Image (cartoon, rainbow, N blue to C red; front, side):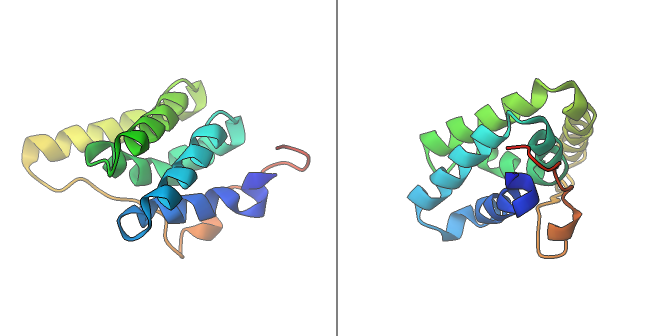
Length: 125
């Protein structure tokens, strides 16, 4: 229901703007994303649109708590067989960028991406 109502999109939008928000706000959004990352429908949405929003936080965390929350969400995504292909593709993109010195792609959600997140099934929380 949260995915269908747009909560996942809103939380990702907060996460993308983590540097321009109060730390407590950013950490609260990451905490919610960590909880949502356990739900299968949200896992697919997060792997599709949230992966590139979480990775910069792990790379340059604004706080230890933000790092722990982002890595926890990524660990939950890694534990899902349905999201592994997207995670492998991201890993390859990051390794290629590191080897070639080219900047890694950033597919963070923006206004144009908001409508691309899949809608959940009725009755799912």
